[in-house]
Image (cartoon, rainbow over all chains, first blue to last red; front, side, top):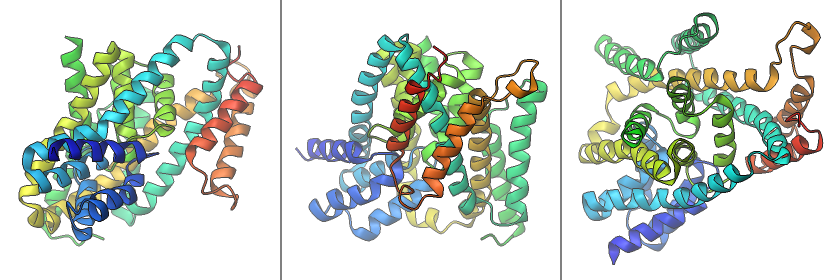
Length: 185
Length: 189
C-alpha cells in the first residue's frame, strides 16, 4: 500500500510540475513534507540542491532521493516512475494526435509561429543560466570556448562535437582545480 | 534493435545532461544530427510541447523524441533510458550524501560544468534561431525572415520588458505565437 501511495503521490507531483523541474519544489513540499511527513523540510531542500548537482533531470533526482529515504531502493525506483508516468501518458497522446494532423496547413503555420517563441524561451533560459554560471574570467573563457567549438565546428567544418566530451572535460577540470586548491565562487 | 539504440542514446543523455530544464536540448539536437531520427525543427516542436504540458521538460522531450523515432514503445523506452542513470547515481549518492554535499571536487566541477552547460544550450539554441530566421538565397534583403524577427522581438519584449506580462507562463507565449503563426501563415502554406 505504501508503495502504491508513493507512486500516486509522485504521479500527482508530476502532473502539477508545469514547465520544468523548478516548478516542482512547492508542490513537493506540500505533498511529501506537509501532508505525508515522509521527509523533513531541511531534507527536501538538501535533496533538491544535490539533485541539481547530479546528472539527469532535477525532478527525477529529487523523487529518487525521497523514495530512497522513505522506502529504500524500491521506493526510489517507484517514486521516479510515478513522476514520469504523467509525462508518458500525456506526451504520447499529444504526439499521436499531432502526428495525424501534422500535414494540415493550420498545424504547420501554428508550429512555425511556435518555433519563433521557442527561440525566445531558449534565449531567456540561457540568460538566466548565464547569471549563475559565468561569474569570472575562467568561467567566461569556458563559455566562449565551448560555444565557439560547437558553432565553428558545425558551420565551418560540418562536424558536431558530442556534448559528452565537454561535460567530461569539465569534471576533469574540476579535479585538476581541486588538486591545485583553486578557490571558486 | 532501434529500441536498444534508443535506450542507450537516452541513457547517455540522462547521464551527461546536468543542470535541469533545457540541459537535454543539446543532446537531443546532437542525437538528431547523428542518427537522423528527427530534425532541428522537430526538436524545437518537442520543446514547445514539453513546455506546455505537465511533467519535467527533459522527461517530456525524451518521451516525445522516443515516440517520433519508434512509436509508443519508443516513447516508453527513451523515458526509461533517460531516468535510469538518475536512479543509479542518486542511489549511490544517497549513501554518501553528506560527503557529496561538502565535497570540494564536486564544487569545483560544477564551477566549470555550469558555463559548459550554458554554452551547449546556447549553441543548440543558435541552430533553432538559424532555422527560424534564415532564408538564405542570393538577395541580401531576403536573407532574414523579417516577419519572424518582428514576432520574436515582440515575444521577447512581452517576456522581459513589459512589467505586466513578464511573469506569464511560457504556455501563454507559445499559444500567442501559435495564433500569430496561423493568422499570418508563417508556415508559408
